Length: 398
Image (cartoon, rainbow, N blue to C red; front, side, top):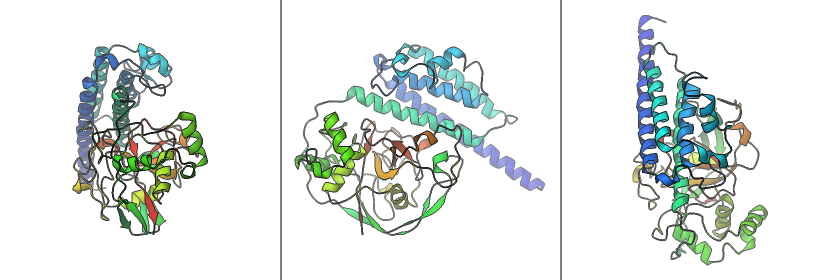
């Protein structure tokens, strides 16, 4: 390596640190704004049996940051803090006993100050991939806090919406060798490695199914028609007495339906003479798109869904709208490893969920921070999950 190459490498490393510092600050500003806006009485309350109290998520963000970025055992990862905020500490139902909000906010600030000091030290080795993993971890827990807050505000008996029974509008997506996955510093283990997959031409709904379109399915007896449901979906629907989406805004017919599981999405698709797209079809349809704050309703900026088609900057080459933001989109694909998968940064992050039951979702929701969203990003939940901000868009074979 000559001197010029050495200076270039140093300049690239410095630029990467500056970008990382800016992203850490931007993400943290969004996180703090969210948690400071939450009603204090909700901070230590468990709002759903599958999830921890809101305040635990904030403390867990700081604990994870200290554990991974400040060097193992340190003043911010003591046994007491581990018990309070580690995943394997208290049971979720016992986490209502976490410290009060001011103490957690102080803990978060102390950890971040130490993190930025380490980042600014040119002598301190920085594993950029690990630091960006921790950044995304924070963004993901902020989204969890957003939908938990929505649970507290949810109206269990929403008003009806006038059905929109017009045929769905589709765009044609040409077939070809689809570029799948990513290998950059942001890429999580389940996104690696980048590879090509043959995708035949298909049609994809121009936008996610709206509440008014889903209301037409409901008005036509969609929840009561056994022939529209898979065996597993019908058994689940009956056992849980499912009759409508989990999240519903009676004043927003042109917003995407949110709070539906994959079983409901598949039943609607059968009713509409369609199917769910595969995750490879979805990623191929989004080819060429780069996620920015202007390409969709994302980043937690608007505190809820918006009408479909509002963001032309995020329109795909084939004319599909809202591929990023508003609601996560269910796909037909099970969550599975890509060829050559290697677990990172620990075995259980993705590998534990390659069980044949978890389904892939793509595209992000209005509450997804930009730091954890890209074309190759894969989310995963079991098909019965309804409390997240999830919708869908149908596909058809050509």
